[in-house]
Length: 199
Image (cartoon, rainbow, N blue to C red; front, top):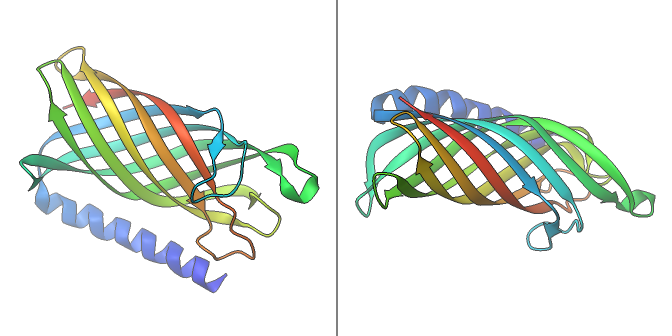
């Protein structure tokens, strides 16, 4: 419990620091991104919970920075997850199906975008953060507070000067980082659809 609270406090301290620091490195091209995603099942990779269906909604705030990698400008992003739901086998109850809902925040996000043309772009993004579930998840010896990271690749279609649509794939991992008595975790393969508003 102490370790869990410590990580929680450190993450939100980093969020405050990032918000202050980002004011110094932000250059231009601010974006608001609304994301919906669906994962029809889970894979056994870092997480060990099989046959899990996941639905997510997320809002991201992005700003281009003055930093680059191999000539590509780096975006800094903060994400808010107002809703995430898992439909999963409850190992403690004979693998009967159960649902758990939660919300979260992703204070650390970085990405790059490659413009193929004036209309089409490809982006690569990663983020990490916290998700608070409505019950111990995904087993009775898990935790309500979980930690998450993801990696996504997206194809972006610019429909107007300030509006774009994006279709992408996201690998998403959630676990309690060994703060619970058990840490089975869940790995999801999301198909995502996004609406991007640029300023």
